[in-house]
Length: 352
Ligand code: F6R
Image 1 (cartoon, helix red, strand yellow):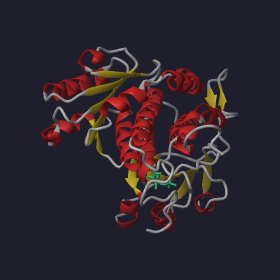
Image 2 (image 1 turned 60 degrees about the horizontal axis):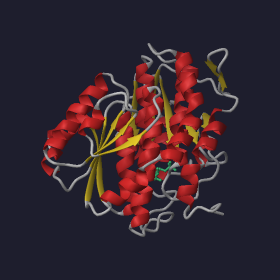
Image 3 (image 1 turned 90 degrees about the horizontal axis):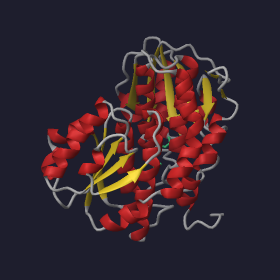
């Protein structure tokens, strides 16, 4: 049942601390500063294939591998299946909650036909992808009933961190610090859930007809996901962008009627550049909602703030996404939408 929540989606959003603990369980040795998985693929290059929310996790995963010095790219599975890139020593990783998405299966089968090793990163142990791929890494979220992916996306982000740390490390980053940030993630999500102002932000902006989401680096997939979630469950138009891309055209649509969610954490170059983009939209009169840890001065340019605890940029992306899940949920709820079963959508898309 819904355990007292109005919707499965809200229940699943609140289950995230537990889902992530399960994902991390037994895989992280903090004393040794090591991540161990029961798979040990040889990795020199990586191609990720996925659709929808899982594609956003794939974009994030590819960025983690590149940060460790490993060439990695994410592809939309349906595009990959029809225009397959050259495969050299690539491990092809399918990211799929269900393990049944036909487009992703087609991509994996093509990669397999071309001789690649394949890895399924999935939630469903007996799924077709788990069976057909060379290996499988399970995200261990438990069943997700809401059609819109929520806890499984957070677990995909967590699992792909584990995959990168276990196989290729973290480049210039301090592995122990990253392991600590992953360990802190369930408690930090709980803090977000307990203190979020997403409901009041949703009430303030529920009447808007169009929303934009921007983020840079690890926050780019979060911006894409924030927009997708809002579209799926509220039926409101939304677009997510790499923050730097907005001014290359879409800025023409930015007005006082288009709220912009800006994900800005830390106070590094990425944050400073995104704040530059925030100033551009603020100058056009757009309401700005900053999703931030308060490390930078982005709040000066924001009409509202959704706070996240301070942590590494990689884990901050997960926390920022939780705020955006709550925003999407509360906007959809204010509008009386069918949140757990949005129109036209199915939990698992088994046709190409
Ligand atoms: C979004 C959503 C879809 C799925 C996509 C891939 O909330 O649920 O975009 O992410 O259909 O599904 P899986 O991950 O099962 O391959």
